[in-house]
Length: 171
Image (cartoon, rainbow, N blue to C red; front, side):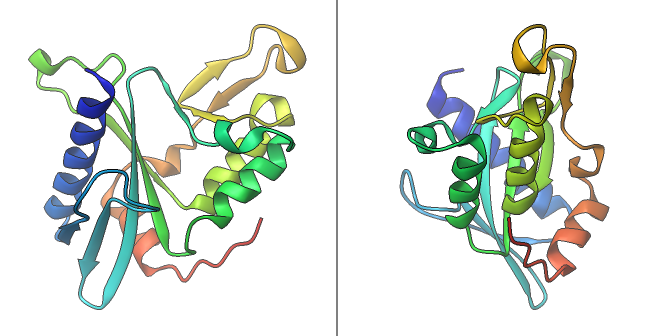
């Protein structure tokens, strides 16, 4: 898929799963809207959802913010660009075969959780890319492995946690 197809497919899968979980979905109109792509609502609970699609095993989130900053500073700046109640949906198409009827792997996290993950990646040296799974074979992180936390996996339990939590974490 090209970049646009990955983006559309990621947003569509995320919207479909939230709808399946009983949420009303509103899609933001227009390309490259700031901060979020969807709004999900159930009862009086509402969250903005920023959708990031990938087909290479990782989601580059802070590369554009890194120049002149440490990895930690770039992560903090990225987190600050989101409202506290935004949910980030990370959709991974790598090794997902359409002909097998498989769906992409989808993870849900707060911006704060992602910022923390970026800071702890690469053996605690920081990174600009959230990687689903990566074994570092060289450099300062040689021998360490970055793995997305299992609790981020898309599930009704994860949705309930993110929707019902009044999280206001700070980096």
